[in-house]
Length: 480
Image (cartoon, rainbow, N blue to C red):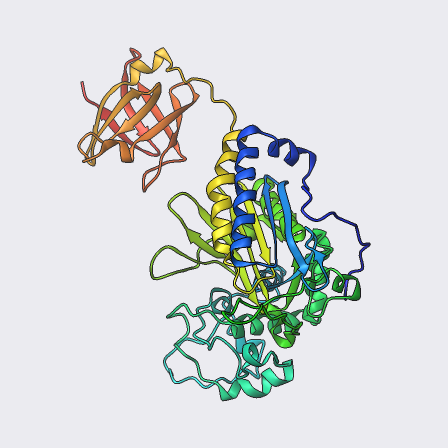
């Protein structure tokens, strides 16, 4: 089912944002960083003759900035628009994973199910007889040990298998690794997940995703498989990489067929900003919209950690760990299309960048947006913090407390009541901050293995002198 939407004329390279986002874009520091980003993008594109690019930045569900550069089709001199439609390639895996989790939440499958429970025709050769069966969660985390592709040279011949082709040839392939032992990216794996969506739901994958995910989110420029005629007029022409001795090659439209769940979806930057806003909304408001809020958070936690500990995979989502932030999202690479969508939860900032140049290195654009624009947004939206003032009554709690486990020292530091372990090498790394709740009662803030999030309570004797400190249910005696 293709969604028909009315076309809206948009001037190329036009700023587009909601009123709140536009106000933020006008903040002097944010505006300066956008101006820097804009100039840098234009220079980078000119340097490698990149045909076109669209970028969008969203903060707290409001679009701060989006801009289209260059051409959607060079030969026809068609300007790029913010709602131009791209093949978003491996972003498709996010929508397949969402569908799987919807069916899980509906009680129609379990992530621990062996995939043969739903795909009895899956009979790939397995040279590892002691291996665990491939389970649904293995597909979502790329830990199934499957080959990257089906037994078809789809990326060189641009001919993807049908569902029947896939079922007939899977027995000719061999598992690369035992399941649940190695991270190995697999388009085949997510295509199988899409087949499970069809089997369990009793519906075509295309119809399920467009009806149950895209339509409720208002992603009116997005679709599965071959776009409708209405969408085709906004579909960009993809161009291959630059060659030393010839111009870029215009790439044909390629139907991914049975690989739609892994790589066959199309969308626009505007729609993917909507997709990011939805994630922000669920994370902030704990509502149920397409997914339960807790299910989205589950999908965006690391369930398979990479060997370098710099990131991993959730259920469908890729998570990268940086020194200054963690990013959650996905990228995509299709002939003549490069796409990337990333969310920084701590900053509540998302970035989408699409290009129709096959050698467009979108990681550079995404990284610069988070390096330049995101911190400016955070500073511009930060609420002033009133200066902290220590309560004079806290002096009655100050002192040393002792238990069999060691010593705790209560101090007033930087106008806060804190508990430290004075015998540790660095007492400040394990400190707890006590936030007042009631008479002699505080909430513990901290990290690590202690009772943070629980209550601290000071017990007084009959004369009103502090004699014990309870941290959670256990206590230390005050040292005279």
